[in-house]
Length: 212
Image 1: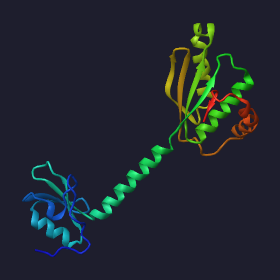
Image 2 (image 1 turned 30 degrees about the vertical axis):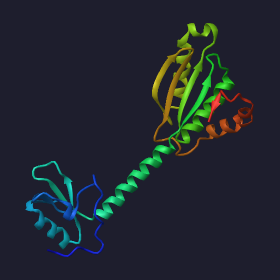
Image 3 (image 1 turned 60 degrees about the horizontal axis):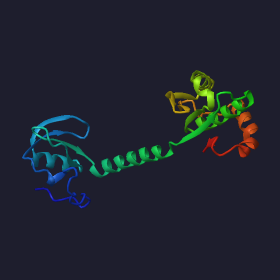
Image 4 (image 1 turned 90 degrees about the horizontal axis):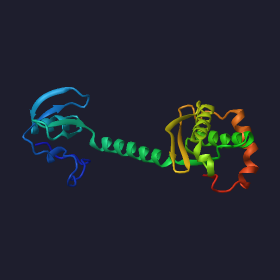
């Protein structure tokens, strides 16, 4: 039997992938490091083949008959998998949701200001929850709120796509916008102007109107 390599991974914890001598099946279907099918081999022969290439023999399909084992650098494989998982977690943590609240009878200037916030949020790769707040008899005309939401979605369609269609929830109507691939690739002059114009007004608005 070939001697154990000095850099071979320590004995695996329970419930992890069997590698090298931890593979108990007498025979395996062997896959080479480049993906080539080498057929069914005695496990010892497959292990010798892996070690001859200074690689590990890793069981990748234990439930198959016979089990499938692949030749690979297991330490490198584990590192790459951990990096992918870390990147995925980082991406998830960066996704946040901003909120903009509008009234169905919002004025032109206020609308442009709110739209500027939406543009900025989308360019920051954030999702935007847009809420129309109805009061009193405004609830008898929900179509006005929907029209306003769809108008906003159309105005920012280059950088924002509807992820949740307008939905009436009590006295509110809610729509969710998500950034498109074009979002954040470069702020337009109009967006910069909207942000600059809205900066002093933002501080004066009630906190409930814009949630960041």
